[in-house]
Length: 124
Image 1 (tube, rainbow, N blue to C red):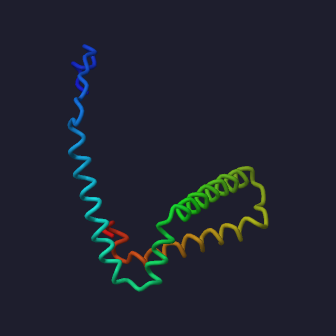
Image 2 (cartoon, rainbow, N blue to C red):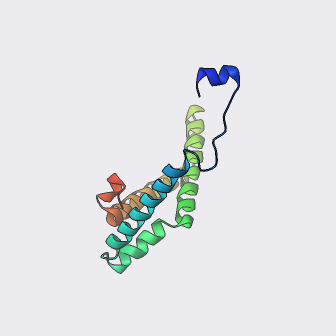
Image 3 (cartoon, rainbow, N blue to C red):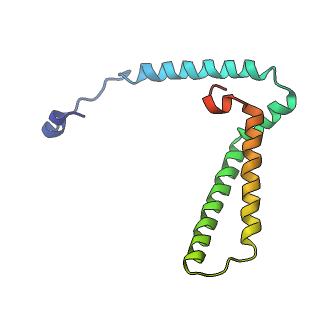
């Protein structure tokens, strides 16, 4: 937004089919092309790799991972408060932290298996 538009208060509305429609159509076409390429590449994968990829890419898995991250953040805050107050940690905290570490490690290992080098360049 230019300074002149801000000071004069005159804004022109874009006509229907304005400047954003064409880039969005192009982005949609590119996305569809990537999806078809991804499907062709995945067709050569073993069935179990495709099944695990489907699980990892599912909405339920994403929600589960988000929930685990939130729980981990709450536990970090709780532990920080305990350490600031110079209290001893509860006996359940270490096993829970270790479980979260194992969960994260398994998640990354499975993603390395599924996506391999594509994990880093987002082409798959």
